[in-house]
Image 1 (cartoon, rainbow, N blue to C red):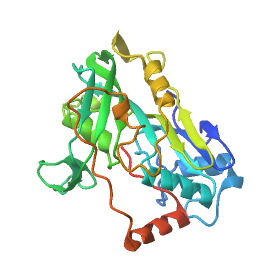
Image 2 (image 1 turned 180 degrees about the vertical axis):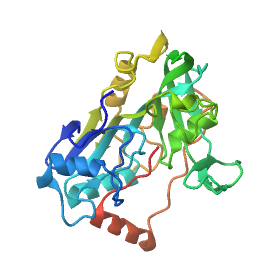
Image 3 (image 1 turned 120 degrees about the vertical axis):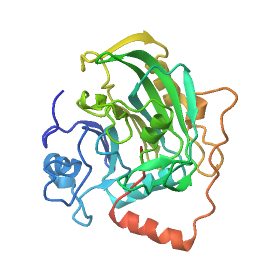
Amino acid sequence: MEPGSVENLSIVYRSRDFLVVNKHWDVRIDSKAWRETLTLQKQLRYRFPELADPDTCYGFRFCHQLDFSTSGALCVALNKAAAGSAYRCFKDRRVTKAYLALLRGHIQESRVTISHAIGRNSTEGRAHTMCIEGSQGCENPKPSLTELVVLEHGLYAGDPVSKVLLKPLTGRTHQLRVHCSALGHPVVGDLTYGEVSGREDRPFRMMLHAFYLRIPTDTECVEVCTPDPFLPSLDACWSPHTLLQSLDQLVQALRATPDPDPEDRGPRPGSPSALLPGPGRPPPPPTKPPETEAQRGPCLQWLSEWALEPDS
């Protein structure tokens, strides 16, 4: 696989107000540390120096986050008004996101709902990590919901692996990685939440990719579907043998789902639940109370710099 470089930046969507990039794995969005030789911010400055905004800390307003190790769709607002419109979509839970992943083991269920609450891990030596409610050292767990569809079973470097589509209904830090680990099927290559047997030294990256993104702003609907990176033609270690669900059909379902009404504070029509019918799903997370003035202050500060939404 081609390594990341300052010149190697893939653009999958561009308009007057937004860019969407297909972020390389193992690239930080931004950093003030001198030792960071490559960041997405540096790639953007190299490709689009005329679009950098000197009034912001990093030159660009990133509408949400992706982990350092996660690849895929990341939206960049090109002005303050666009950043505000994207922020409101995230705040009103109108954004639709879907990820592709390779998980350890063969998941027997075709579709799974994961509803473990997620909190900060205060255990010594586990700083900056998350854990599920009930785990030792779990602080301030919050309701979290992920829905999973199994696409294929196969082998990665000889070990059983499932290729899945993941849809987060909430946006907790490291949510997808923590939920998959709690399910007993951690993401292949996840050195933080994966298995401790040493097998995670084999993959060249963490196998989690932001595949689909839709942000229905008031002026335009930003919608992208990035290329699938988990194909045998791109990684000879991945050998699928059983197809369980067509990815193309799920993409069609995602695209056909109507955007929710911003005034509707109930379950989102565009949520993963639309793809996972059936009884036994937990209720959606409780809706948030109206925003207070104290809460509004940080939001205004956010608009003055950039847009951030905790992610997987």
